[in-house]
Length: 113
Length: 116
Image 1 (tube, rainbow over the protein chains, first blue to last red):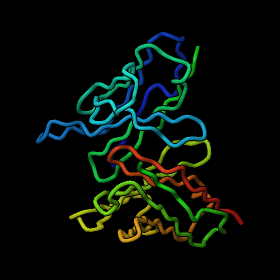
Image 2 (image 1 turned 30 degrees about the horizontal axis):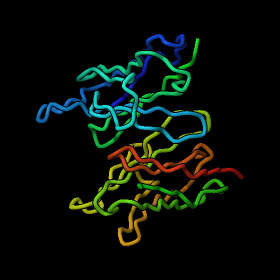
Image 3 (image 1 turned 180 degrees about the horizontal axis):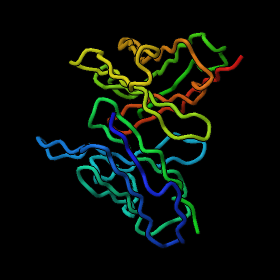
């Protein structure tokens, strides 16, 4: 199975500042045929199921604020929140859907500093 | 509106079996792959597996740690996906989600508690 490793495990950022969460896969999730990275980002708030934010590594899901962006290719990816808002406090997960076993990262807890 | 509702959770003794259901609405169920993910209390997300829909004809994929003990199936006529869990262990205690990966639709989850 592809192992997904997120960093850091937790992050505290001031309101209005940039937050960046990293995700590294143990092997490439880039499909050489269609040039797509099979990588998604989810946000999970307490007591709720995860919410899809980003798919294909950088495509923003409908309704997701444009302060959220995804980047990266191959094995190294990042989720960036350009200006942290109070409602962004959550745990964030990356997930690869390249191999038939769609593994998640361990999660990054984002808090307000 | 896409909706996924899990049911069948509860308290079960170690070694016993349990079957969860995921009832779908708001889309043509048979055309979509359905996945299951679990989350132990206070822990991260753990992908269990998926069952394909459409022309791929209900074929399945599982994470290595669930092969042989968990089984996915579906009834497209009822728009229901199933997760059969056998030989349950205390460490299987978790909230079990079904999801439609395409579009990122998740249910609210079914809580399974394995305890004597």
